[in-house]
Image 1 (cartoon, helix red, strand yellow):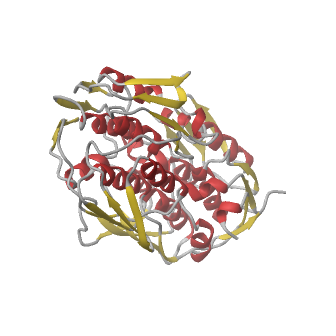
Image 2 (cartoon, rainbow, N blue to C red):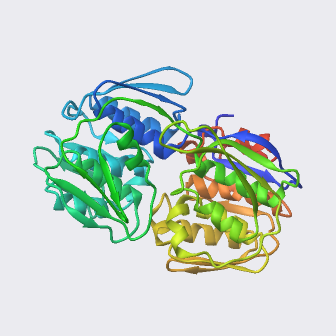
Image 3 (tube, helix red, strand yellow):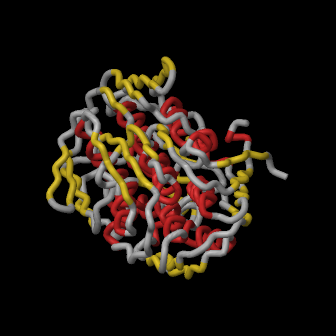
Length: 440
């Protein structure tokens, strides 16, 4: 059964997992490859593109803006760039589906265009905050309207942008990226300073497209008006998708489990540091360099995990992987404390609250904090989980089944397809007993 049509998982306990698996292409990089290819001059060839709901929403939006995109086969995409001034107005609002990355980066991409655009999304995305992106863009001269801080986002065209020096009030790769994309269309220099390191996929890819990007400590800057030149992009396996199998292996792979061809950008792999701090046995084998993003095979073995106080500086480097880290913590000895994770409050769901409720439903003692969670490791029982339509919560509790004493049922899982199409089949390939069923 196709996961897009599925509303529930039932995952039975297993004693062990193992083998080797390949995860789909990186979602963050797929989004950016389409967007930058769309405003570049020439044809950009993207291999390993993630054919997920989120990325296909970005593709549809760019096509509506006049960008020619073809798919010759498999996971290859060819983007014929419109150039920096070649986009055209869409006849209808641009529907970003469930993709917060697509909406926030598009705000930067489109706020300096000569035409106006309206950005909308699904019910979940229409509830997510957009003002933290809109505010710095307004400082650059953009005219942006939101509805009480949330979508629809209306970007009024015809404004002249100017570069700014901006100190991010909180670490956010999406806000940083939106400002840099707007900076391409601005006069002068745009500088963004981060309070803590975040994903640098945008900076790396801008350089791949020939843009001069300067980094000095926590500050990244670029000069406006630079043209992008088409290039070839290889999209690595998505580390955030690999994270579920990495944790499953740490919990139940005595003979080892390998995830092949994963992107190991150091701004994304904080989960590995967290798991090692908890006692995990992890081997990273680098592969030949395929461009701006480093690749590796990651092998994990079943390990005796112990609780830990997670350093807050690691949290921005693992923000999307925290739900499955919480599963590792629930299966560890003693207590784990995670703080500095208030960003999880404004993801596809309030992931802190949803994970705390889910952990309690399978018998885990935890305390929800304003910016984190305290988890007491121990035995897990089966139970029923409301994923709140959040793909990462759904997949995290599928992994929890390796330590549960009876099946875990997970409701509202259709959005798994936004980031990991084919997750149930991949999970079964390593030994997880995932059954799909329609809503009751």
